[in-house]
Length: 175
Length: 121
Image (cartoon, rainbow over all chains, first blue to last red; front, side, top):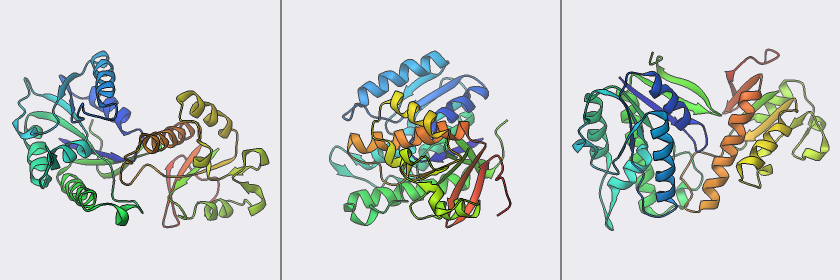
């Protein structure tokens, strides 16, 4: 079962996704797409790793090439987040690639190995600053929009988190 | 307390007016002590978690709290911008927990996502 969770920054989607994941069949994998480089990434990763270990998650860091990931056993995975994964597949060592197919293939490959896969994303397209953004940022926004729409189409359930409240957009509860 | 969220100019204050509040009963100034406060995202000046929690407790005493949704769109390059969005998001989540009713306004249309509005509109 594929569950997509979207919402803005600080909307409470991570906390909701963690709680939901832990209610679903074990083992529980936390698949982190966040890279260590820059912007306090290392501190955030260390914090997340401690938190998720305490919650009983097996943390797997996977900034790119999700399709190559083999889970040790079938269970429930929480992938956080599509925004980072897309950026990491798009910008590699100063070069620029179209990330859409790689991200979608990665999610599909992971979903096959899970009873439930929870995928966290963000809506970056609703922004007045889009028109002023540079070309690559615009390409990123468009790629992420396409990926989100494709994931929502494949998903059994889609929630948007608003003020910490899950608003069901498609399908039904995971339980 | 009723929490109303939505984008800039989405119709949040118009909804408050439909709920029976006059323009004079709405202010963006906390010191004005009006039953309705709007633009509370502007009150998030300190991104410290304790400060946001304290602000939420004060705002929870109001009858209606109106806040712009600021968490969508391109994630800011600056740390400051990211912390602002996170802090406003946290404030809204805390207010939503306390609220009897949470409404998200889209194109002027109220979407009730928690509880019920006190009157049919």
